[in-house]
Image (cartoon, rainbow, N blue to C red):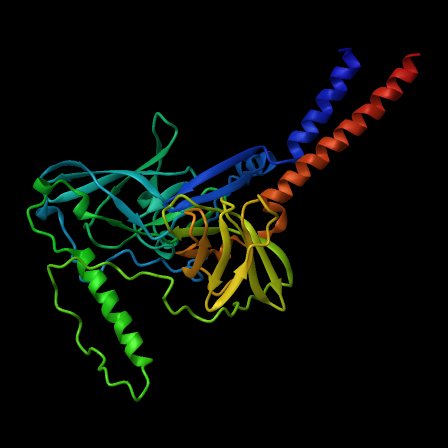
Length: 402
């Protein structure tokens, strides 16, 4: 390669790096894939250069922390646990704040834990709400330490197990505090670690949900129905009780899309999927379509085996080409909270309806250009421009050399 050709190639390669996404990260979530989020080199450089001392609060008003406690759950304090260090499961209110490993240390009634997060998106934590973090002293912030694998770990005080603890997290990218709630699950400790006996909270919660479901069903019975609605929660039983959750027979809410204040058009929005076997996932960010200020989403699955989805009492059919991953346009009936849906899969031969929940996050609504498909189009377009421009320039230089 001649010197002038090398320079031409170098210039266009640098332009390519500066105009297209350079990192593609697939994040694994509890029940499937929350896939395809992109980072830009210019954006990364911009965050580093700002070094802003001002901090703001994330959209905690729009997305309140999800409950993490179960019915009847009582807190377990340090005095109820043998001194020692234990691995423990931690439940989080947000799939964007996923704790993949936790180690609890108990010493003379005091507890602390080292948490390892699934990503590196949070610079610091605060044991309290985001509002309290803004009003608090910077000395009370808990910074991260990087482990040998490059993952962020945080050493935090633990007030109690089996209790929802406010834990605000400061986003590196958004430079805002976000409210999270975490719960240290005492039942995941070794049996000999606890000095108290735990109730079967799963059975209690399942029984309460079953009772609530029966109450709701009873309220819909006709006047001529001779059956009586139960007025007391069911007594505990030694028989195993399965949580009803969402089934194909569950009466879903009408499929009425919610109203948003955004202008009509197409946007990107982050979404998570829960339920099923955990083997299937959806592409996120996904396409959000606003028509007459009503919200609709285009859901693309990681499988081609889904032929229809149910939202409320309405059925939506697969619009993807044969052999492509299943694609549906459905109304968004809830934002920042779980939205129940049913998807019919043919993966097991006989069609089978599977209950899922989708969660759409309003504070992630952004330009359509964040969509993976749009980024791929930009990559192809830039590659074509570079090839054509490079060919023309090379032709001109050759002509001059003659």
